Image (tube, rainbow, N blue to C red):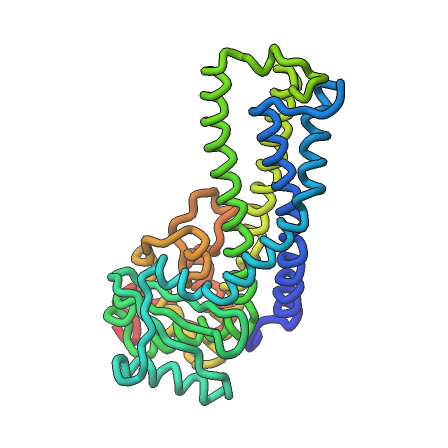
Length: 342
């Protein structure tokens, strides 16, 4: 197993990060057009004599006037995320930053790992939960942070905690954390827009029912769309929103699960102790559930909350990770609780 995985993995992560940032404004404009189309369908506005094409033309005209604001909004969104993403994640997980004086043993374990390889020391955070988990965040040097749970600190011994910290340091070295943070920001906006669209669908459906179909009796050439054109516009808008949201989900699950294997390998290379990594994973297995947003859970060393089939899971099964460590790193697989350190 390589020290930090393949260099192509790091390059691939950086390239995906660029693509995500470049594609975000494009998909945001597409979503904006879908929202205008949804509004046209519910309100019955139209342009031209064609009752079917009218709402589409109106939405295109509205988009032509507003797309600069959408791009500015995308830039603002990433700007806010760049400045405050760590605070948002801390608020979602309850994590708090600690210094050496508060947690000297944990701080020293991380510092020694960093000194041994000339790695800049990331910030250290703790989540006050009995669950066993950890994750790293950050976009560039000076922003990186490693968070561990209180349960992990209380349950794992020093060698196992060191292995977990080395695993998270490897995520930082491999640029995994940058890609994951960007994906959280990227998927978050589409989740918000999708929820807003379906709420408007419920509200709009109720409004159309209470109006007694008055829009369908309006003249299509007088700036109003008939019922058929409105329904087509609504359906088309929902399809566009569904495609954009599905694409965001695909991007989320396209983040390679290989990153966890490579981070396990990197932990072994840093600590020279595959048994500690295996023992840590055994203790974490079945005890990692943390109450946090699904986007944040993707960053964890273990994410047991997969709502989808294993094909779309964000993490490979721990059993397979342990098997890889035993096969390629020479680690010993002991029965839980009977390993070399208990």
